Image 1 (cartoon, one colour):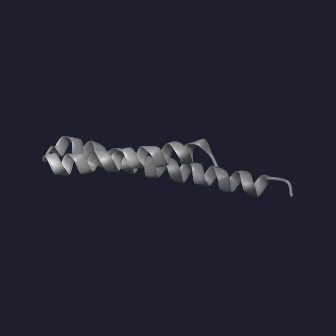
Image 2 (cartoon, rainbow, N blue to C red; image 1 turned 120 degrees about the vertical axis):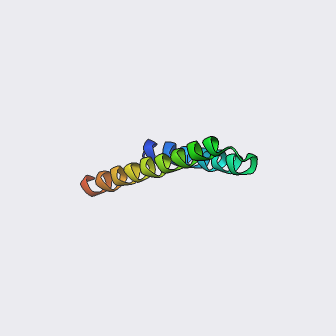
Length: 61
């Protein structure tokens, strides 16, 4: 598993928590930051997934 997948998952989770806290407290700035962080985490996870796919494809069998 690529390190980007791990970091992306962590960032996505942190963003989800931050977004929820923003919703609960009514803080739209925190909510927006959490949403952006969650999206960035998803993107980083996808990059890691693509790296894993490429690595597996070129791996000698």
